[in-house]
Every structure is written in structure tokens, then in C-alpha cells.
Amino acid sequence: METINSLDTVWVLIAAMLVFWMQPGFALVEAGFTRSKNTANILMKNFVDFMVGTVLFWFIGFGLMHGEGNGFIGGLHLFDWSFIGNSNIPAECTLIFQTVFCATAATIVSGGMAERTKFSMYIIISILISTIIYPIEGHWTWGGGWLSELGFHDFAGSTVVHAVGGVIALAGAMILGPRRGKYTASGKSVAIPGHNLTFGALGVFILWIGWFGFNPGSQLAADGAENAIAISHVMCTTNMAAVTGGAIVLILTWIAYGKPSLSLVCNGVLAGLVGITAGCDLVTIGGSAIIGALCGAAMFGSVVFIDKICRIDDPVGAVSVHGVCGFLGTVLTGLFATDGGLFYGGGWHFLGIEVLGVTVTIAWAFVLGFGFLKVLDKIWGIRVEPRVEEEGLDIYEHGETAYNN
Image 1 (spheres, helix red, strand yellow):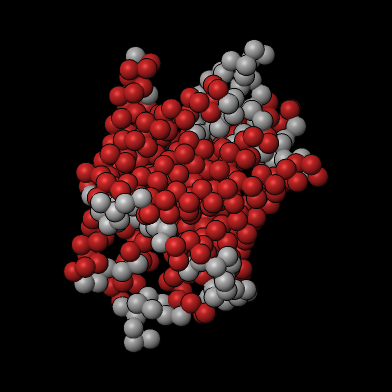
Image 2: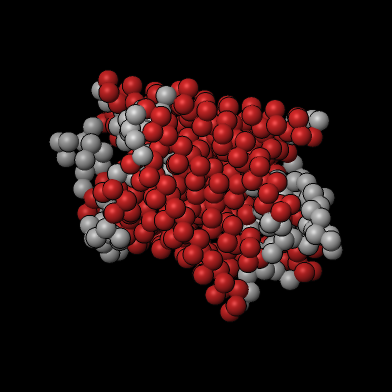
């Protein structure tokens, strides 16, 4: 108990609260970018993600991720967190901080599968992410597993959280197929506007605030000059990437469409935040500006490519924001890291480890996610009936609507 530092503990608990604050941010973004007839369903799924994630991560996920095992998987510690021991923060502080990260990974999937997924099937998907997919791959990087031993660096989760959630969302969108009316008979994409851009924009601002817990909180300490400098630096790089991610999309949409698009700028901000999350501790503020801009541009191109070329319907852009930018941000860490990055004389080794780490992690998540979803679809069907989709999931799946006129 003597090793516990009060300031470190309070800082990590505040960071955990900020990461939890991202949950309503995701809820508002997803609800705002989809149609009003599905709002209660979207909000309910965000509650489920956190409720399921909290209980099951405590039950089994925390042990599989952080327990002593082998390079692939941790240990089986049912309803037990004491194995982690007290460090500069109590074991329970570690548990709650890791719990909110698990819930975030599951929530990302909701947006890509929005407006056509059976609620009961979504609960099963959330369970699988919280108990198997996330804890095992998380162990590889954050639990002392084989990727951490190789030197793979993902400070706060561009790969472990965001890319994983993004590729599972991709698997779900592929199996579900597009929403009714999304594509014409000739395959032309038809825009389906969200019902409330105010909600969407407010959700992005909330997520932006939450990221100041997500990234700086991952330092897991605040006491002393070294930690104070570290969390201040991470705060600055995180914010800068968000700004440049949004700014580059503002410019690109203005050029491409003649008018700057609010909805895409919102996703540009998120793209910058996702991209910087892996290397926010290792890159300079200037490097973070470049990473944010590159991720914003990649998101913009990816949204167009996935929608118009691949004809995969992702209502909120989850695949592009979290999947593509989670991958890209991790790779760019191998270039821009001041300690080991290619552009700073580190050679190719660190970059190679970053590419390997993100590739195998997203392959694991996509294969398991696609496999689980395919089995569920074959047995029970994961998509609602056409009439339910046409009239809205709120009344059929929950017996109530978000807006009662």
C-alpha cells in the first residue's frame, strides 16, 4: 500500500471519467448521423455496450488481458482483479480505467451496423468483443504479450481500441448489407442524411474532451516533473491532431463539393484524434499536426471509396474514422516518433514492428468478428425484417420512440 500515489490515483480516476464521458459522445454522434426513427435504438446500444463491457470485463476480460499467462493470452481470473496488485495506483483504479477502454472498443462497432441490426444480436456481438476479441489482442500489446516484447508501441489505442472496433464494424456492415434505399438498381449511392447535425457536432465536441482523458490518462501517473511534462505534451499533440484533421477535411470538401461539409469535418476531427492516439507520447507537436492532417485526408478518401466503390454502407463512417485512421496513425508513429522513428534516424526496424503489430491485430479482429457474425447470421439472422427497417427500429425493437409527437 505504501507505493500508492494519491495524485497519480486521482489523475487516472479523472481520466477514466473522461473516457466514460466519451460514451454519450459516441451516442450523440451515432444518433445525429442516423435517422430519427432509430434514435432510441442507437442510444440503447450505447448503454448496453457499457453495461455489458463493465460486467464481462470484470468477470473474465480483465484477467485474459492483464493476467499472467503466455505471449498470446493472459490468465483466467474470474471476478478477480487483485492479481494485478497495487502499484503507484490501486488495483481497482487500474480495473476501472481499463474497463472504460473496453467499452469504447465495443461502442465503435455500433455506428457501422446502425439502422438494420437486431438488438438481441447486437448484445451478443458486444459480449463477444468484451470477452474474447478485445481482451486477447489487448494482452498482446498492453498485457505483456508477444507484441509488447517485440517493441510494438500503441500508447493509448489507435490499434488496440480504434482499429479493432473499426474492422469489426466493417465485418458487420459487409454481412448486413446496405440499408434499404442506400443504392439504386444500377449501384449508385444515395445519400441518407442524419436527422440532427447538432447532436452529431455536440457528440464530437464531447469525444474531443473525452480524448483528453483517453490519451494523457494513459501515462497512468501525474506526480513529479517527468509525468507533468509527459501528460502536458500528450495533451498538446492530441489537440493539434484533432484540429488539423478537421481543417484538412474542411479544405478538401470545399474543393470537392464547393461547400465545406460539417458532417465530414466532424469526422475529420475524430480521424485526427484516432490517428494520434498511438504515438501521442513520442511525436512532436509538429509531427502530430502532420499525422492529424494525413488521417483527415485518408478518412475523406476512405469514406468515398467504401461508399461509392466498395458499396459498403457505413452510416456514420466508423470504418474510415476508426479502422483506416487507427491503422494509419499506428504506421505513422513508426515514421514520426522522435525515439526510433524512421524520419528521426531510427531505421526501418521500429516502423516494421508498427506495421506488423497493427496488421496482425486487425486481422485477428476482422477474422473473428466476421466469423462470429456470419455464424450468428446463419443461425438466427442479424438483420431486422424489411418492415421493421422501413418503419424504424425504435418502436419494433423497444416499444418506444425518441420523439413523441
